Image: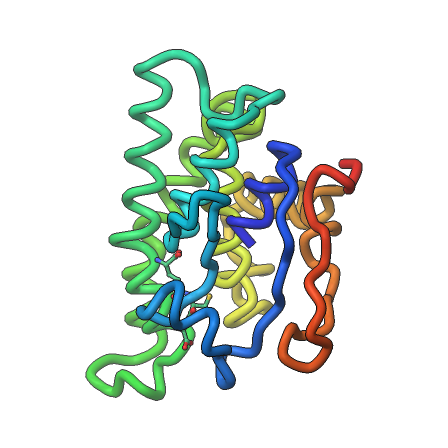
Length: 204
Ligand SMILES: N[C@@H](CCC(=O)N[C@@H](CS)C(=O)NCC(=O)O)C(=O)O
């Protein structure tokens, strides 16, 4: 989702090959043996295999909305938030999502650990509508897909929670044109043998 958002919002054009993780194509593993998606292969054959790096690469090509934020202190704050998301929140989120595979603690315990970051975001969003101010930035696009996952583990709990500002922010992003576009389904590459042009041809 991150990579697609980055490509879409920077109006880059890629040939998209949808895959099924249980049947990773040889061509994908040859390009990126670590076997995770997304993988971006550039015209010079170099490979970018981290979603946040694909976002940054795309926005460094063209960033009409200034999602990368031009001022250094702002950039550092956004990077720190994304870092906390990726390295602190996401590991707890994964345990919360699959608590049955982590019997050391209860689902509720894992959720409480993840809530440290949720509460941090809620506090930021009481001050402004997006994470870095009232304008969207890379921080919003890099983080909201994970908060969406958090919300959907126990939707009733999340809906009843007191994270009012976070819920509003999440709704805004889930209902956005960009998110609607990236959630469109494509036939898988192995089945269809076809790639799909994705990015600059899509208006958001
Ligand atoms: N840090 C990586 C994580 C990528 C990742 O773990 N992707 C998952 C899918 S969302 C995956 O490919 N898992 C491999 C598998 O399930 O076999 C990134 O954000 O690019």
